[in-house]
Length: 119
Image 1 (cartoon, helix red, strand yellow):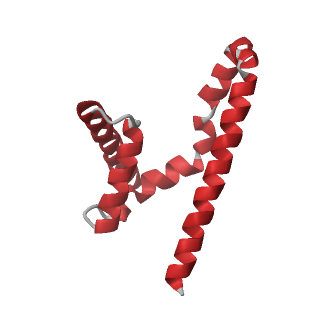
Image 2 (image 1 turned 180 degrees about the vertical axis):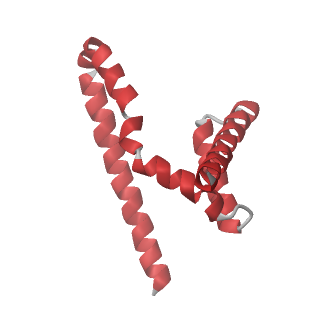
């Protein structure tokens, strides 16, 4: 019973931060998904110690353990719209490759800076 309440409390915090991020993005007019702002807020709250990591750890572990299930709706949608996907395959592949390369470059730069800072 206690574990269930801890999971529920952690999930409520995550949903609240998502809602705050979404509201902020709409209110300020930032062209960024509200969920990203909510995650940034989560990082700030965790790093400053305002939000204890034990509060959201259970819910985060649960979500990560069941992450594959969260991809099912997207996979089904792709199958439903296979015709549209086929017409846009070049743009989709280009976007995927570009985002992969940008991600690798950013990770490389961050890793190098962290390595230099550790020395």
